Length: 273
Length: 346
Image (cartoon, rainbow over all chains, first blue to last red; front, side, top):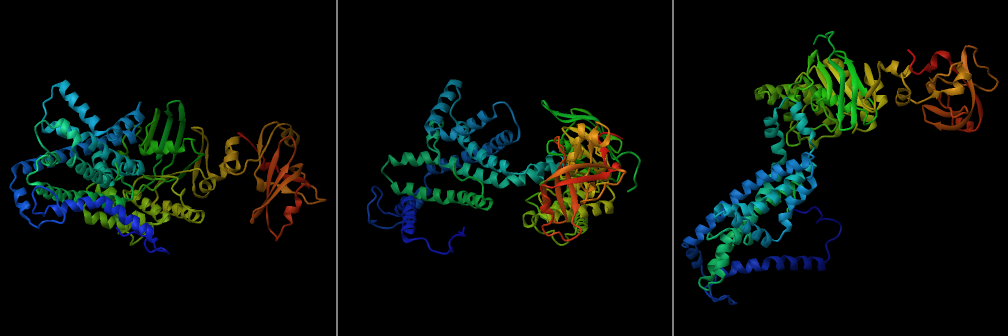
């Protein structure tokens, strides 16, 4: 997004430009290092300068079945958790913003709480609950774990939209002869779609890289982040992890950028969590 | 559309309570077919709730509402032959102007070509031809207002409801739109029910109006009737300037202890040495304030005993500061007996 403030009377002082650059480097240099070492010929240690360049790790990574399984699992979990979150988050936002009921403030606080809670607490809580209820760990327990925080993301985004929306457009739609379904289809859904989409993409991204809650709810299955984590303890084929990380960054950049663009256009949806 | 003798809208003992709040309290009302009817009142007086009950956004706690003789009290909005122009226009922000106007036809599955042609026609009616491709956010307040009108009129409702539609416009535009709305109403010949808190607006446009106060109707009548013969102190004060004479002073002037209302422009100030006509009421007082307002000058005259009358004198000749010198002077006022209206008397 081009910034509108760039061409104002004076340029930013050099010190500030320098500081901004330093911040950008600080945040992104490590990612860059991962990229670089995906091409190293040294399979055990990270030495600098690189002893040589190779693309062999891409081939090795492609041949690892456990990697593909982990990736597939992560994508399926993220998709299902996101869909669940979009449904539940939207309904919760609608309830909190549109109706008055006893304990509404408390409900609204409890809904956002999972974001503030450390993942480790959520993880332990879920694991113990599943233990008490005798639920075996499976694909669905991972999804449920992810849905807890994904839902809050969608809820926050949609709630912000609902608070800003003029609800008389719903009345106007009914007034013009639209039944409830038509009003939903033609007025409500388009009005909240960008908030819903931005929330959904963020939720997907969060679920995709979640480690802590997953370790408590996954049992024997490995999602991609857990697979990467487990690779760190094995010194062989280190650059394979870097290749995977590189792809993860590239893949995740798409929904994040899209979601960023959408919120920029709307000037309202929250990107932070 | 032919006018029928059945009232377009009828309220039979309608109440709407929100918990302990009686937003609308035992209202009986008839609005004739083809009439420009205004519901006038301060905020919280129940006028908007009444409008919302006609539209179907709200339902009466008790009583019945009839549209052209049919009981619609509990019908949902989309089953009523009325359309609404909302205070904030409520245009669909994600649709073009043309799609906004055509919305009512779209949900009725009218073919695309036909509803487009129809919507273009409506845009011409509200004098916005060629703006169909824009988004509502690209329009000015006055233009949005017209789009909202076109959108509500495209279904050819028998009753159009307008909820303070001019509230957000500036004074000049508002006055223009008042006349335009009135002309439009005469052109399409349907019943307009108009809600406002602006008494001048109500007087300008209405065939008849109802003055609301605290959930009840204080008076229904033609603008002149309401202004000239207010039925209650509230009406006298809300429509026009409150000018009341009561108590001992009323007895001294009129011979009756009833409360009287007298409009400021009907009071004359005697020049020095003049005598009031014999067939008039007169009273003496002290000019406590003078306000020069361009077209006229307003005098506050203290008659004693807590009775202060506002007197309006047209500035027929160039006055250049002269009226202001009158402050603090003792003057004699008079007005014709007919113009002093006893509050509540028929």
